[in-house]
Image (cartoon, chains in turn yellow, purple):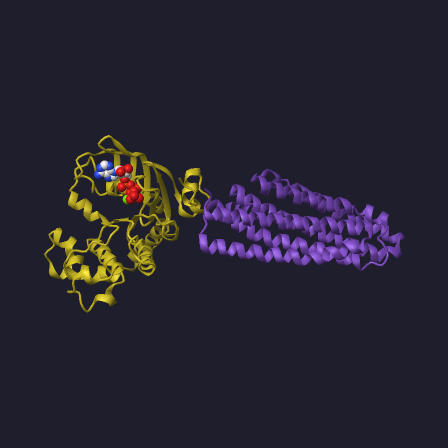
Length: 279
Length: 230
Ligand SMILES: Nc1ncnc2c1ncn2[C@@H]1O[C@H](COP(=O)(O)OP(=O)(O)OP(=O)(O)O)[C@@H](O)[C@H]1O
Ligand SMILES: [Mg+2]
């Protein structure tokens, strides 16, 4: 016994020393989303042009650019939300967790579970708060009542809504304020435990207080999730994102650390856009 | 059509340039007062000091409102940051001009011409003025080249400062009657040396604004980096 301990302990200790090494590997594979030479067409219209963008796990990426530049198109590309548009065509590779979602065999439902989406306008269903948050789980076919209950409550707590709604989870979600509704929608996305959350102007319909609560929430969520957010609010992009990507006329003009983009952008068009000199 | 922030930034820039020109004139006048024993001019410099301070306050307010109301980014943000720091620094140069003028005003007898010449006071003032002209040109033309020359110019002021000490060491042995005058002039050279340093700070800010390059403490960072790599 004692001798075995004597032999094993040094090995265990040594192993501890080596645990530093693998972080290197971790860094190399930390891109959870990667697009390679992606082109998107709506019929003849060339909406995204050779977009190459890599997004790190547990980061917040802001997509900015003038109206019609392709931000929403890019976002919807990542969970195949545009599949139902007949004229929509994609060229190039879109890798999510290393899987090419337009070529490899994948289940759309599984993809939507991994890549959740929050829309510009809060879109709760005319159902109870509880059922709104449970919606994704039911679609997934989860029947376990305990699991559903746990996930729903967990999600409501994560979005900071618990104290406000805990006594009437059966209340119709449409009776909530806009900011509360948007948090219910975020909770609905969180309940299915995705890896990536896409947000398309999630606060554009909200007042400053609701907006700042959602921004705080985003900063908390990035511990567990990877967030990609479209915003027209430059201050919002600079407050909450780690990386900012500027799109213009379907091209990814510049991407970089948010602090760099907002203090010293490399591209003149980026500079003109963020300083409000566009057009 | 110019947007509102552009109008305000142009206004801020014009304020900075006006203040700069005023302080440059203050330095020039304090030099003339010193070399010509001109008490009236010295008094004028002292009177103008309050105008310099007035500019400082106006510029600070303008920066404050730009930051609060326009949430500037990129080059706009860099310009306002540079303007804020430059503002305080120009004001310090104004202070030095004022102090030099006071020294001149308090002298009953004119400074010894030979002593003035041997200490290269006129040259030191000239270098400061050249520094100021170059930074003003740099700001006006949005071109960092002129500002980069400041670092070389600063070295020549340091040289004059060092030389003055060795010169006085010999000179005072035979001119004990000039000790007080020599001390005053040595003090003025010290002030000019500090003005040179302040101009270096300003040049760093202007370069930061125009080229987004951070020069501040570059040597120190370089040393630290080398130390860490060893
Ligand atoms: N279903 C569609 N059919 C045809 N063209 C489309 C379709 N959806 C988008 N487009 C076109 O693709 C371009 C990019 O649209 P997208 O919605 O991605 O822009 P956006 O950057 O999100 O703009 P906004 O800031 O206004 O939301 C636009 O020119 C748009 O007209
Ligand atoms: Mg859009």
